Length: 87
Image (tube, rainbow, N blue to C red):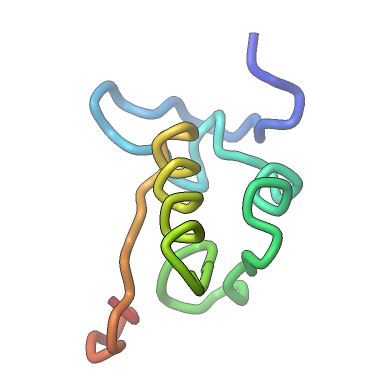
């Protein structure tokens, strides 16, 4: 039985894949904000990741990696932003 704080969306994540925002089990905003208080969500209808977190130090990087692993969500590292999608 899924945790009540997890979103009950339309589809299951295929085996071996990372969760997408449209998948059952995608973490709710409250889960993101509890683990990563400085996280912010992209504007609806814009390109790029669903959530952004600007790491300030090594501990922040570790928190983001651990969150992505624990919740089976894709992690994109954005460097200089030369890509159209902000990668």
